[in-house]
Length: 299
Ligand SMILES: Nc1nc2c(ncn2[C@@H]2O[C@H](COP(=O)(O)OP(=O)(O)OP(=O)(O)O)[C@@H](O)[C@H]2O)c(=O)[nH]1
Ligand SMILES: [Mg+2]
Image 1 (cartoon, protein in one colour):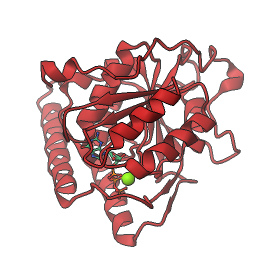
Image 2 (spheres, helix red, strand yellow):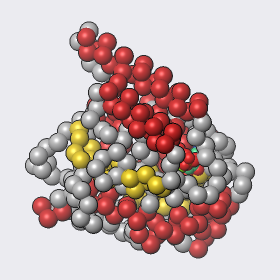
Image 3 (cartoon, helix red, strand yellow):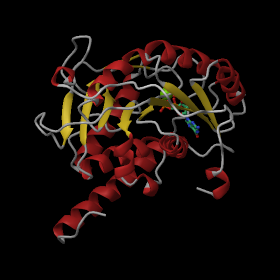
Image 4 (tube, helix red, strand yellow):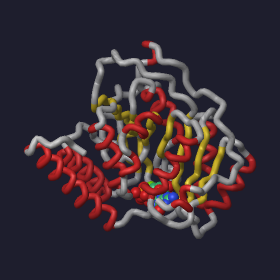
């Protein structure tokens, strides 16, 4: 990432967060699905409930955008309604359709909304990394990943945040009991399910939905998983972060969510993204096995 990009500042007069979204954890706060849904699935370093987790701090919901002018206002409104204490950072890659300008207008009306203007389209992964960095620098305790197109329902965010009280990373999962997909053709489901199973087996991690893009991280998790070295994009970016979190010994929980296919705007999904992910994951998996065989420590 260039110096110029590092110097990019949100144009919203963003001030330090002041609200606490959470209180110190108690036994009564054990993670669970607030609506009585299935128990979240625990993976990674499960501590049997003995480990004490600190308070969450203020939540920043990062929404990366590229040509989401029709979607950005509704999704921001839904997040504000669903988790009123949370702040939102729209990370826009200079969308030709004027998404950045719409976001600026939202930020003028609401001091919980910030905008990170980036120079041009550099991919989802780069936008999230810039958003994470911005959030950590500005003192947020929880960084949430959420798409702009309504696939990730803001109404489910409180359940993810409740689970994060007892975890380092929470994944909004389509492939655990209780998880659902609405409006996806069978072909898309096949690619997504297959991609998750392939990554799980290749990388030997117990996460069901490796490509999920609806996640809540504690800031310490992002700081501890080697975020600076992440170079992957698209699906691979999500797989990369999940794998790093497990390798670093963080406690990961999957909470079932209902994923809804986008209704408005254009998909940025491409065959290249899927192919990139398949090759990279295979090379990570092979590299990791070779390291184990040779008794070398994982990088
Ligand atoms: N800042 C930024 N955001 C991006 C970029 N590519 C995609 N996004 C955003 O990332 C989120 C996910 O992208 P989508 O196009 O919905 O990808 P998808 O969910 O795999 O595919 P569909 O939902 O079928 O379109 C959306 O909010 C996009 O606007 C990018 O290069 N830069
Ligand atoms: Mg989408």
